[in-house]
Amino acid sequence: MNLRNAFITALRALSRNKMRSALTSIGIIIGISSVIIMVGIGNSARIAVKKRIYTAGANAITIYDSQKPLTMRNLEDIKRMFTQIQYITPQIYKSKLLVKYKKREIVSRIYGVNNDFFKLKDWDVIYGRYFSDLDIASGNRVVVIGETVRTEIFGYVNPVGEIIQIDSIPFKVIGSLTELGQAFSGRDFDNLLVIPYTTAQVRIIGEKKFDEIITSTFSTEEVDSTTTSIRDYLRIKHSIPPGKPDDFRMETSKDKLKQADYIANVLRILLAFIASISLIVGGIGIMNIMLVSVSERTREIGIRMAIGAKRKDILTQFLIESITLSSAGGIIGITLGLLIYFLIVFFVNWPFLFSPLWVLISFLFASSVGIFFGYYPAKKASQLKPIDALRFE
Amino acid sequence: MKRNIIEIKNLYKIYGDGEEVNVTALNNVSLNIKEGEFIAIMGSSGSGKSTLMNILGFLDLPTSGTYILDNTEASSMGHDEMAEIRNKKIGFVFQGFNLLSRTSALENVELPLFYRGHVSSHEMREKAAELLGLVGLSGREHHHPNKLSGGQQQRVAIARALVNDPSIILADEPTGNLDTVNTEDVMNMFSRLNKELGITIILVTHEPDVAEFTDRKIIFRDGEIVEDSPVRKKKKKS
Image (cartoon, rainbow over all chains, first blue to last red; front, side):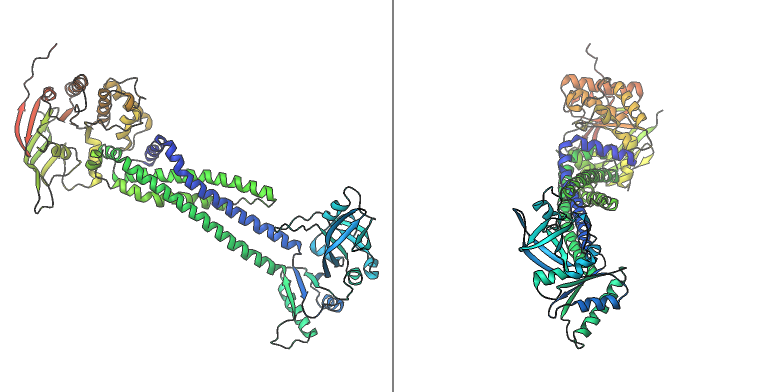
């Protein structure tokens, strides 16, 4: 028997039991669609997280003070010593500040920085301007507001030039930022205020120190070496003898990316593992149905053998049946999975990543589930003796 | 003189482990059958007639002795070779029809051609339709077996047996499940195939009325042939 005839035979047999064939495929459909959905979401999440990390600045190195405060002196030293540095800004941070404008109010957080901050984060103003040199030099009470602050307290009013009260201190709004979006935790990135660091030191915290220094290099390759150099510089400045731990903390966007990648990978493996279990369950479903089918169709097998079917013909027929079930399940599962995945990322506003490789892998995997779990029943069918099979009631 | 299509010499079939509990189903059977013969094999159950049919049909191999069908000897054959002979040289007709359910008459008749290979689906269709016409079932090609009467189902089975142009047709109690009218119908069909097309037909039966239709009667008892005689035809009722 040639393969074409084997296909016709198998398809006829399956169509004789449409309901059963459909139900058998469901296991595979669920398995494959969950693989597609989970891998897809895993990948999308990874990209989304990466984007977020880059909004903290590509090639960024953050120095956190922990015991000794970071100073303007440190910042200027670093800027002068390392020519590979593109942007550098101090950062002073304070949260839970009450912002008032006329009768409206909102609780927000504040960043005291210089103009490099905007470039480093790649944040744009939609209304107004950034800080002027004068603003920074004289510690002017000027503020650039986030999108949430703007919509909450100004509504449709152009905020530029308006005066708002931040913890009862009047500030003049000079600009408003573009929308940044939400963190996965639900934290609103747009609920923020940005003021010159000099103003923050004098008006908000009352201390001449920085919480962080954020800097970035021109190229990604320079991040690691620059981190080491800054560390050496700070250790000398803080007179830390060799062998003693740092009294400050440094983190690069690469570190964050690594962490995020690690989490994403663990998540992906976990999801793939769960999805594989459902595929195996689907495969066992196929095996179960094929076994039932073989014993139910013993007489048919006997007839086929009597009229000239060889063992390998019977084997082929039943294998094709199970492969057809699993492959059809695979195709439907892939379609369904992509659809659900698309809907999910559409609603959470993540990127949709279509990976032909994963589609191919899923399809091949579904087919091999059919081969793997269909082989035993098919073998069993082909080993029947024609006389016994014919007499089977 | 017509040639022997079947030659059987000193055939034994012994079931069992060869040590203690052995059942001798065929005991030194020798038999020649010529091309174009129409033969009834009779005997009570356990007489060995079914065992002989299985061996004749290449569904089983003898323990010893020789069986030659159409110049092919059945000794130490593998499963595949036996399947091929069943496919090319033998047409089976069974008591229980053994048609595939939920499958049209046409597809049932086509089935042996599927396992032959090198036959286009167009040829298959044509051949199957032609044979359904021969057994008088034109117009019922797309009926499923459960929509056909017993006699019609058996005629579909006969068409299926003929589709591969076999050397012999083996019919195992072909009328066992049929009423008198259908029995006569099917037996007339066999007679016609034998007389008009010269097809060799061997059928097993325990009904003397059925054996009446044949030309030669072989009676088995305890694995041996006890009678082998021509059938004297009664005058047909008209």
